[in-house]
Length: 59
Image (cartoon, rainbow, N blue to C red; front, side):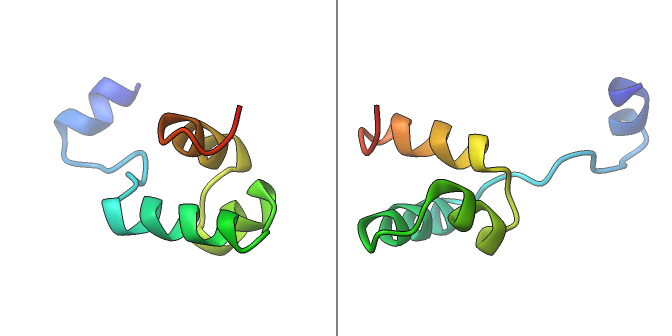
């Protein structure tokens, strides 16, 4: 289904931009939880965790 939609130009997922990831790192430094960061930026908390792990910010 996703392939069908993407072939027709339908966006199925919102991709994270570098500024959004940078903002997530900053909010994490300020003490916000990953779930709160996700809500603020419009992503799932698990997505935020993955990005923070990629930057060495969380285990």
